[in-house]
Amino acid sequence: MVFTERSTEPEAHPGNVPSTEDLVSAFMAVMGRLTQHFFQRSAEFDFSGQQAKAFHELGEPRSMGELADRLFCDASNVTGIVDRLEARGLVERQADPDDRRVRRLVLTDAGRELWQAHHDRVFDGVPCLTNLTDDDRRVLCDLLRRMAGDPGGSTEP
Image (tube, rainbow, N blue to C red; front, side, top):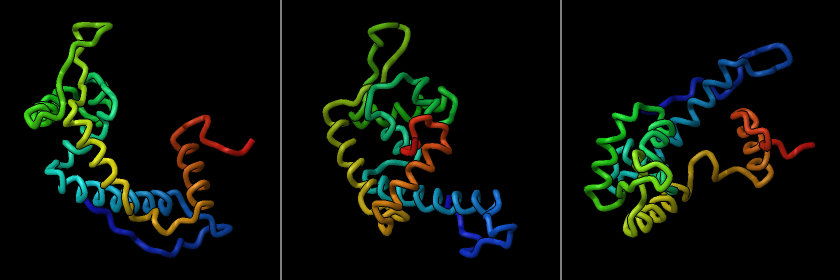
């Protein structure tokens, strides 16, 4: 899925403040570029989009339910994705030590090695970020964390 930018010029608003629509449109355009980058780089590892998202989230062990929550989907949808990762020898299901009814998804040795290679490739030369200064990055990260509701997101007192 690719989002297109509507306009590079903000619409006229009181005090030249971008409207909510302007902000959402800009976010959607950036998300589209980032998603396209992620999927293109993930395809180099023979991952579908959903497999790549799931694999990325398994940098630490997670239950099937936790993975489903992070992928914003039903747990039943995760089963097929995990089956394909497991068939490639990248992930294994293990009993949770605290609750044997729960299956934890854990990367195998081969999975950890590929996870790191995938991670490095996906985060190399990310569009939309390569032309930002260090100050731009700090400000953007602070704003995004605040918008996401991270109480520790602000670096200001």
